[in-house]
Length: 362
Image (cartoon, rainbow, N blue to C red; front, side, top):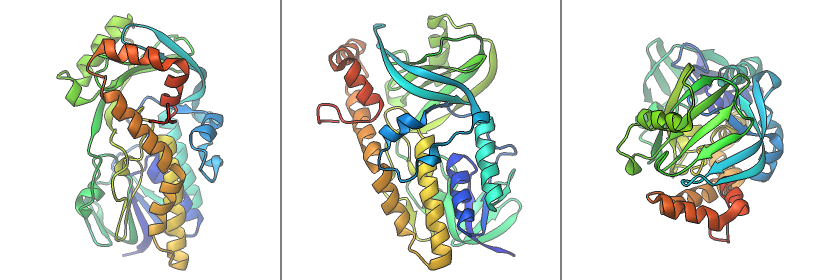
């Protein structure tokens, strides 16, 4: 049985990026993906900050080429981010964003990994991790390094006795056919308890959805979604259903244990205040991949992965978690949340959304 330098479980943005840079650095890499088709189904709102915004959001990142999206993945570009308060006040901020087609985007990242030399096995379920062995329904595979890039409820983390994100925000949405205003909308308050509802315009449709916190709502995400689209008068011409779980408690305490790394959602590499995870996943995936390649060729310690991701994106992740905790204090009361937004004003809200400190507090 062939032994690999690294086995990566999961072929989402985190896993494919890790695979690309590990293989590019000379490592022998196998990616195991349980889905038969990469990128399907879609689990998020498909909105990403444009590269110029990423340079402001994650200014300590070493290589901004990691944020290249690829023209074929782009459904629409936007330049306005609108937050809507519980009582309906709009706060419009200039913010350059890109709405991607996740099916195309994820496949492109996987193709990049293949071109770099990684082997990708789809339709394969991991049934156990034991030391350097990955047990699957298609046989056992061995590697010096195991990477869990398999989402917030990580199989790798469970078998390795590693922590998973403590809080998960359930999300539900649909891609709805129609012509929508070229503005990304985020509605907060009881319309989406503990989270927000979104309308993200695509070329001939929109990704419409809600993300909530269970402790703020007795309703299911689907019920919350139905109430939101009814209230907004959105005609439900459904093209696809989206949904999943979004980590909202910040990075886990340890993303490295022995020969195992966790990356992306599995590591809690998500902006807790807004659920954004793809840019962070790609940055941390690149760091993980490069660390694995150096470990394979030079014996560089895997500990460098944890040190480096904390240096490059640890600050924004911490700021985002502080903002989320502050928001949680007022989420139960629409009037208090509305008043807080008016006090913050357009500039303060923009700083919260972009995970920067406000008043030196968050």
